[in-house]
Length: 209
Image 1 (cartoon, rainbow, N blue to C red):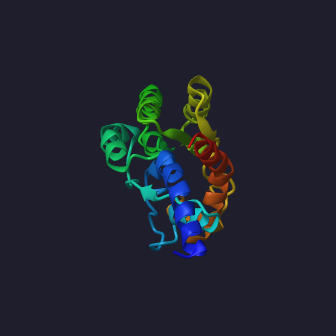
Image 2 (cartoon, rainbow, N blue to C red):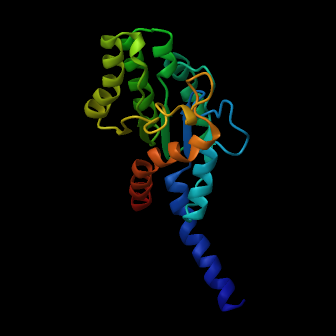
């Protein structure tokens, strides 16, 4: 057996336990992550997979996002998703549909907290993507909705992105005609909003592995 093949086998054997220990990445969201109105292969989640590969991360990205999903729907689905995919990191992107339907914010916060806790109980690290809504829902509801993500960040010490649609939501050229969903051109910007927090989270997982 050549020296080159031996070196390759050693590299594989060295990397495999780390990849297994880290698990993959489960993106658990709604239509913003399910690529509503975006061609196949061009969503921010697809771009995440490509970036990970480019940077040498041997991690599988699973997109378990469902258009129209509320946090209550997420609570009913997450245990099965965690069991099926055994992720090392869960990117949690839910809550926007709760607000669009005017659902009680206390329930939204409780549901998000449940999902964070359940993911952690399975050994996953969690990245929470914060959301905001237009002011036409009333200033108090709008303020409280945005604040609940920061409260979860503080109370549960969960990593978070304060506003997933930063730099996108207020730019008509980056939003579809419905004013809710980002365009294809916005997808790299969404990934850029997530990546600065996600990358250190992956690095911490690699260090543990």
